[in-house]
Amino acid sequence: ISAVRSLLLRSTKSGDILFLNMRGTPLSRMGVWKIIQQYVKLAGIRKKVSPHVFRHSFATHLLEGGANLRAVQEMLGHSDIATTQIYTHLDREYLIEQHRTFHPRWQ
Image 1 (cartoon, one colour):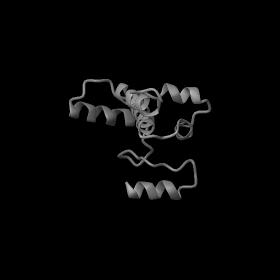
Image 2 (image 1 turned 135 degrees about the vertical axis):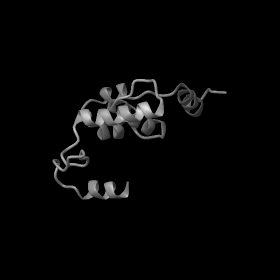
Image 3 (image 1 turned 60 degrees about the vertical axis):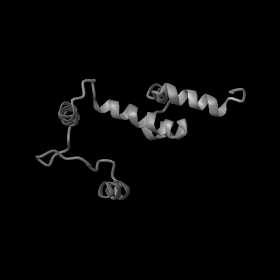
Image 4 (image 1 turned 30 degrees about the vertical axis):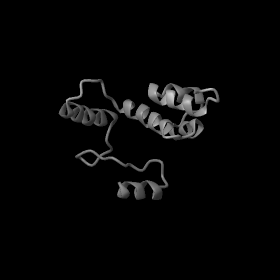
């Protein structure tokens, strides 16, 4: 992870490739999907999993961890914050805890 982090931090060109396939060419969208499907099958996961699920999870974990919605909007590259809100799936227990923490009349 630290090697990838340093590559990302020093990368200045938007065209720099981070992930390559076995032939040394850029990993395609379908290539990423196939890799994920292999691991989903290996793990015995029956739910539908796609690269987009990781995007949803990323946003949800940030928000549940206390990140600002506006910051998450920037990280996801959305021009409209309403789009970011669609990507978030907050756990019911988390919502109850937030209500308890911030509502003045919760007893």
